[in-house]
Amino acid sequence: MRKKTRIILLVILILAALLAAVWKPLRLDRFGLPFVQIDWIDVVKWDGVTYESRIKPRVEVPLADIGAKLGQVQFTVYGHVSNSRYQLRNGDATFLDPGTEVFTIKNDPDALAVLLDGKYYRYDQNMRLPTTAESTSQPTATTATSGTSTVTTATTTTIATISPTTTVTTTKAAVPADDFNYRALTANKAHSIDLNGDKVPESISYTSKGDNYAQLTLNGQVTQASGDAFLTGWFFLIDLDARDAYLDVAIQEVGPSNDEWVTFWFYDGSKLIQRGKIYGMICDPYSQSIGQDTFGLGTIRPDGLGGLVTRARGIILHTWFFDEPWVICSDQSLKRVDQAYYAMVGYDEITNKQLPETPVKMLVDLPLLDKPGSELVVATAKTGQSASLVQTDDREWVQLRTQAGQLGWFKVIDYFQIKIGSKLYNSFEIFDGLSFAD
Image 1 (tube, rainbow, N blue to C red):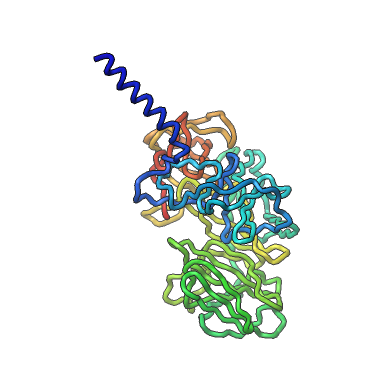
Image 2: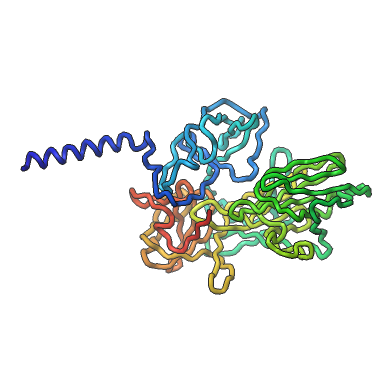
């Protein structure tokens, strides 16, 4: 009997060893429940580092800036992984096809480039949040720099104090001037408008070509746009900067799962130039009276002086949104102004009002660190107690307020996972009250 038991145990150990040996090479951890929908971020993992493309469309990199070839994407996660606990391997990409070539970018160790359809596109490394001492300054204006283009936005920021040593930077809603120039223009019809201040009106029209394509026609010259679920009946005229001569043309996408995008164009005197594509709504695309609606029903809030704030979607922990500032640079392109912190605002489902922090309930004990990058535990959020998500760098660090009011940080791995001791949890296994949307 003992001999039979030993044989059974030996067989079990051998099978366990074999399973462990093939688990990662065969990617057996990719399988989960078939009906689970996972909201993947556009990333690629290389040499142990995850790089992401947060801007739609992807940011193009000039050929002159491309360095050495690193290799090729080996595995595409989207469509092949149904397990939300899946750990990215080197060479994995969420959306890029296998065989996609990966390159370094000269003089930029924190980013890499991928080659798609003959063009190079940028993916940025998940960067750590500055220390508290570095990030508690109180700016009166924010400066955005891109290449040789620099501009200081008129959009102001406010500092909300949440403890004697910690602050959260939030963005004040931009309020256009009383004479702010905004008009909804009917599609499939030519409009006569002076777009560049030369006192000569241009003929401009817009037509959506099915869900994925649209076109603007300016003085007979056609400009094509690609996207997802373009608004069919309307496009828009808006003055992003009253100090210059340009009036912008804006087209709205409803997008998949209500992920709305707006593309802005300006006329330089010879052709339409895309100024930028921003997450959000220029109007209420579901309104039955868009042509009569006043400005302000969307989520994009220009200040009329070259700056705007939009309601952007966060990418870590769960589905959440934050105020994201953008500015017009000297090359006339729109650039996002990166912030050290993003306030993780919540909503009261009963009153339908915004809350300064996202309320959650703890499902397990979570140790909290004194600052990002530290290993010093200063508090523990206890199982069954309430807590609130305060702020995040939207890359890997989140600040939590315990029921007792203590503040501390925890680290997020691959967007939705948190390690406690030796065990890896999904965010919904630690917090009750999170929101997940596709």
